[in-house]
Image 1 (cartoon, rainbow, N blue to C red):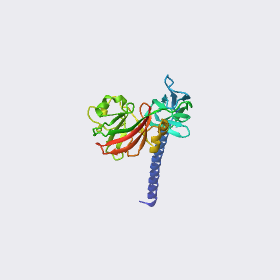
Image 2 (image 1 turned 180 degrees about the horizontal axis):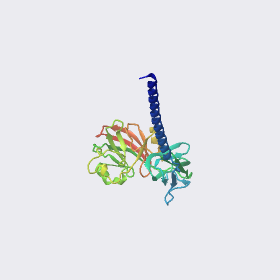
Image 3 (image 1 turned 90 degrees about the vertical axis):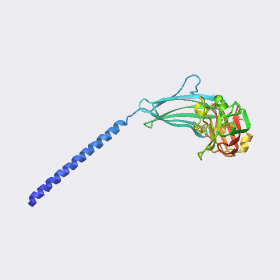
Image 4 (image 1 turned 45 degrees about the vertical axis):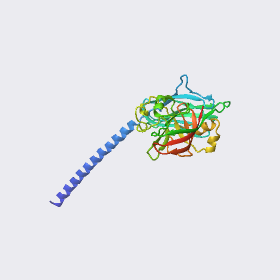
Length: 313
């Protein structure tokens, strides 16, 4: 091919190639613009969620003064018709800040109710926060003050409580109101008063555990017709490991230490890996706070635990 003809051919080929590349780039650019525009359309300017107190009789929904240890009920309603709610938080501010609840969710609305107990602080600010999928939030609050004329309450003391693990003939269940240990069959017949249960969990981090019927206890721990899976009323008690001394525990003659130690944040459903000398704070389903001191733990699923208990009357 003559040089001139070859030059023209290569020139036209290069021009065609460049044209194709430009067309592809144009298509790619248009696609990017379309995707970007679509993403932008998804980002709507929705208003934040709404949150409000339940104002029915029996609920606290404004600043209130209560006696030490008095229970009170708060209800919260929240929603956003545009995007789902994703997070609900309850914080209590006094001289410290405690998080009572930090719960994730994916729902259009929230209807929350709970019974709380007035602590020893002179004044607490209770803050309720709701967040939605767009990371927008709203909050409401109220102040709960302590009646300075209210006195600390009496406590019940059970110096020696021995409970058996699930395969021990000694009962595994305990009622704080009755101060009695129950075997599984007896506990099944008294579900409405059972607060504690003791068992051995073969998970290394759990092992000797005190929980309550309302905890997530595997069905194999208490099997049979009387097992927890067949209970109609599974009361829940929550626990916190404390750093108080045995001497402080023994010197407690009213509920001041019990209330102060548990505080306002929520405890865990199980007191795990119990060892001699451990002192746990707890709150049962009735809102009564208490402490238990572990004296001894012997054995595994056929073993026993010996504790002392102090609880609000």
